[in-house]
Length: 601
Ligand code: FAD
Image 1 (spheres, helix red, strand yellow):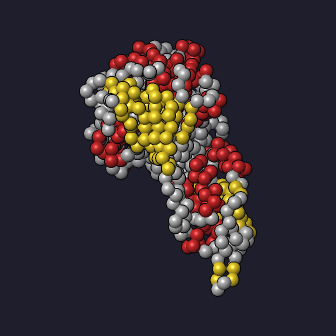
Image 2 (cartoon, rainbow, N blue to C red):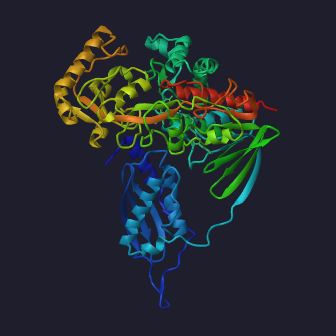
Image 3 (cartoon, helix red, strand yellow):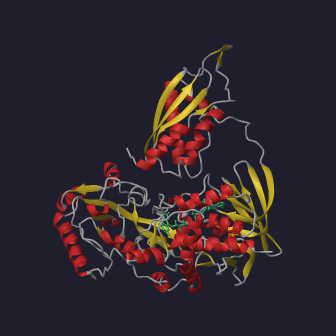
């Protein structure tokens, strides 16, 4: 069973807060031959079912007539993604006195597992499960249309949308932000949190030489000189001021910078809280503390409203209502990328083999809705064929969790034979293309004890190495030969790969693969390895914007009233995004979009 301190803490919290009691709902006991009989054998029962990350355990209390209480006792589902299911499904079952409740979009597997676990418990209470699974008829309520007017409507509650909402508000606008999922965060909350910026304070303290020009050149050349130079300039010049803005809002970053996978240089800032939660929590706190930003969850934008060529609002669909949202100043599209829309991915895929069956690191809402919304009002698109794959997917899920690397400098990749095959400090596309040429497109990340000096050391996904080993997602050997046996690669080849890497660390390289990013040798037991495969990660193409984050139409003119920011836009990263540049991009351009839309008349 998977465990992590973070998840365990969450589990405990859930157990405390999810003692959900039935209040108003009563269901009718079964009536047989005019005689009332019990629906349940009164008592408290424990039920289990398998979910994404292992077993979910629930405790269900019933009296003879009704389901009274459901507690989630244990689960290991991903924080953030599964929260809405864990919060809502038990209450929905109690409210409806039914197992035929709707699953939560974006958390369907967790929802279904909770329903199964409750079913399992109710079977022990002699419940008529078939009857409880029948959807009650005639309970569909008519949908109302709700109409609201504000200054700015933001579509999408990830990092770019929240930055735009806060920035618009700081510039005097009233804002409504709609988010189609049951929670804020999008890919941003799932991200490793690595944020690139040339940082005079922290880099100097670490003795790292860097400059805005170097960040610019690496971004431009790293994307094969296809990025828009003006946008790149805005990105690299404003990345650090945006960190200061976040810090002013209360966000904390670690002092030590690092090189994130494919980031090419040690300028990645790590938030002091896990994953990308710091960004979302910081914006959420601002929104809670200041009147004037309304967040509407479970509400999907379906159409942009246009009057006399200007975008003046958004039509949307909520769980219970349709919505018409008028925007006096304008609309910001911040719906993220389209890695989870396999049709859109395949339609635009020119550089990779078929991705029809490829896995993705992304959250389920990354379906390119903003592309469709913008297309309908004449927006231009750039670089739609530029799809980023990472060589770092979990073999079962494609997600980045379980990735044992902590920093590019201190680990190597070996294939199923135990041979290195690429410069592991290279661009993401170069590494992934090299991986696709290896047997089964499968590799091992290999590193040593120095990366995990204490049992508490966690990877970028808040997992300790021992937890990953326990789950069978990482392996440990006291010698390289022992590790090789465990991961079924040729021990002699693994030893040779590590020896050659260590020699290059001594000389500073470049080594046989051209690698120059090194720090420490791999020479301290125990040694660790974790398996990885290619996975669809980022869509670099999207809506064309100018440096004000205004959307550019197919005729080359801006579309009045329409702004876009974040992964839904194209033109900054060219053919290949540097690791750590997306979080800088979404913050810088989200902030710019918010400021400029607020200034519209
Ligand atoms: P998102 O954060 O995805 O937000 C978009 C939101 O819009 C979502 O909540 C979505 O549900 C919502 N939405 C979509 N359609 C609609 C609609 N029709 N109506 C209403 N709402 C809608 N980048 C880095 O720089 N550093 C990293 O360390 C890093 N790690 C990553 C790790 C993972 C696992 C992933 C998946 C990505 C990572 N990235 C990283 C990339 C980066 O996180 C994303 O590019 C970035 O977060 C995108 O931000 P966004 O605001 O544009 O989109």
